[in-house]
Image 1 (cartoon, helix red, strand yellow):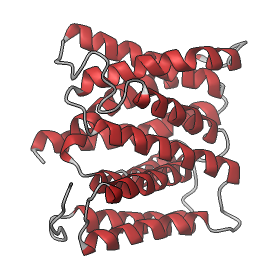
Image 2 (cartoon, rainbow, N blue to C red; image 1 turned 135 degrees about the vertical axis):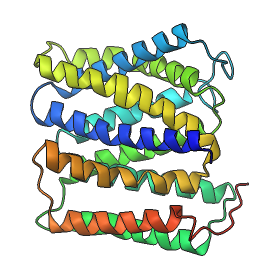
Image 3 (spheres, rainbow, N blue to C red; image 1 turned 90 degrees about the vertical axis):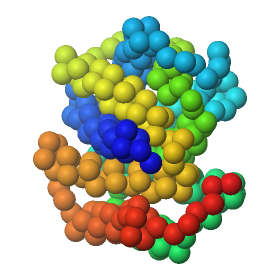
Image 4 (cartoon, rainbow, N blue to C red; image 1 turned 45 degrees about the horizontal axis):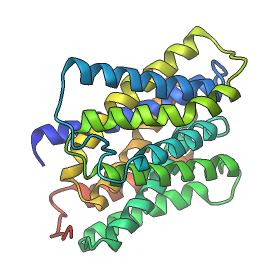
Length: 290
């Protein structure tokens, strides 16, 4: 990967962590209802992306591009992610939610990568084993286990996000493709979310958090991710995203006063070790990306 692509990865992962923190702060704190938050998030993201495309035109991959798949498929995946992600954060904390989300992303993307012919090295398998062990530590039954419905919703969101990321590997115009996906998702969500959000209730702070989530963490963050994806195998893209729960846990502790439990510390350490085994050049073995 080039230096620019590495920067795109870092910016995207920071945006993903920010999304969890902003969503949990807005919804979990009662500053805005879940439907309104989701609607404002996707609509504001669509507006800023369309503005960026208009101000700085870029080459489109096709008139109906969805980033490497059939028209509207990426929008459907993004819609599923948005709905499940938002509802999950009405029931679980930011740190636990991020770990569940990207654990499910890993399973989705790794499975598809294997089916498509990617052959990870031994250290990659070891890294994946550590990361999955971290997810199991978090979700084993116990007093600190997350709400089961919230956990299922978040893992569903992860499967949808994994599909969206896989579609993005075919994007040759990340800004334009992300803008198209956001506009289409806004159209799909407008009526159901509008009905659920009526009558609206919340605060100015909640509105600001939702707008920041849509414009910065989502709109720009997803564009950076689509820019980096063509240079990543499905396997590596999946493992790299497991850094996000570690970032989110630290942010939730600093900004949202969420506790750092022993269960979360152990799970986070296992995930971080798994990411290191998979991503560090010291451990890389040859891969086929057929």
